[in-house]
Amino acid sequence: MAEYRLATPISEEEARALRVGDVVYVSGIIVTARDQAHRRALELARKGEEIPVDLEGGVVYHCGPIVREEGGEWRIYGFGPTTSARMEDLEAEFIERFGVRMVVGKGGMFQKTTEALKRFGAVYAQHPGGVSALAVASVRRVVAVHWLDLGVPEAMWVVEVDEFGPLTVTIDSTGRNLYQEVLEEARRRAERLALG
Image (cartoon, rainbow, N blue to C red; front, top):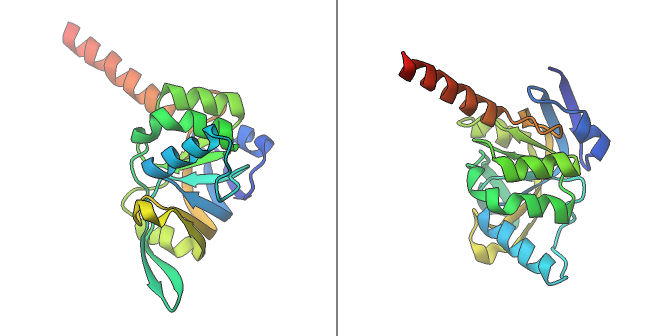
């Protein structure tokens, strides 16, 4: 296990060097996207239309921030991760179409996303849950917000961060998925216990 400090945009080479268990701190621009933002971005891309932010080499954060507008600028007060599993049906195509190099959330993702990370040279990393204040401390400024009509949590927030992390790589570009490994081990143990 190693520790990395990466700046966006992240290259494919940098992403492919990361392994399960590595700790990463990211500086630069990250973009929040939950269910509705994923759906809208993919709908636009399928029609050949552009989305309002370039995600090539980017970090997509599964997060619905708590924000307030103050003096004409947005300020983030809550920046913790949301559960990633509900984006499973959308994430593989999202990675392929937009060139995302890192997906950040909590709770892991499954086979479809794991295959896309392997194929396109990207990783999934987990931000520690329950420590939103840690994530907020990394925020330098809100650069832009898109699709506020979806609601504040579902909008796409473009945020400049410094040392965003610690992020633990839990699915890497070799196809290793820590969540699936833990589930498989739990099943094996349950079977052994059931057999007595």
